[in-house]
Length: 290
Image (tube, rainbow, N blue to C red; front, side, top):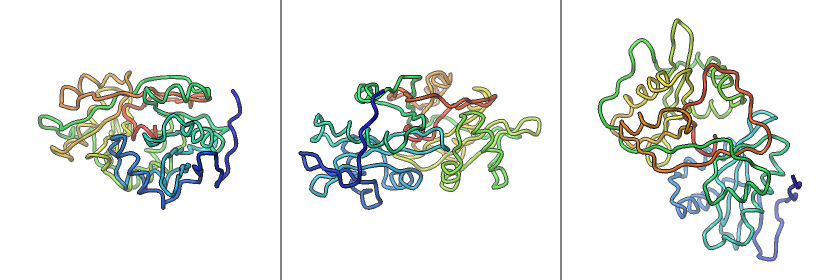
């Protein structure tokens, strides 16, 4: 693959767009960009993403016209996302410029991302290959939902290392910082069987309501039990769950009122992280964190 160009803070091109590191001062501008794209991020969602990762923005006359961010998972892997260019600035190579800056910053890590149909060509030109599909389910859950007694319980602080092990086995990734942050900001649940932790789920405020994810479990039935526990706490509020097309949760989610409203293609540059199981990922924290 052609080595991406190295960009430095303050670089300019003939369109007078300045590439700079993503800072807290850019959050309001980033929020406006995502609103323009009808992405349901809140300012708080952008803030959490910036706290956990790093990235770049393109500014033109003091206005944020593009963003790109990435999140390190140890020294070998990362995820990328929040790659946006203002509609009026598209078609001028700004997306390529942001992506090349991101790759220069994140490599030699293997990098995963979830792409819209419009973004796939940009990523494929840089060596990304598709490896899966994510289905976005959302809506107001129907019916009554209860936490399965004796199977799922709220997570305690002392469970954190157990959750880390489950997550590492399921993903092959070192996501300690991300999990610490998500656990601080949401409700979390642990599924136990025969005295052993078999899965976990986190539910937190995000976008239009709550997102349930990650959900890590050994079986589809266990994943449903964890989601039921989260739904029992949330009541009749708006819920979003992003799940792999191979999770076998789609029909069940549709049946409880969480319709599939879109999808994204999972792509990777490099080598996927080697998961060891038996737990696997049934829902992701969001399409940027992966």
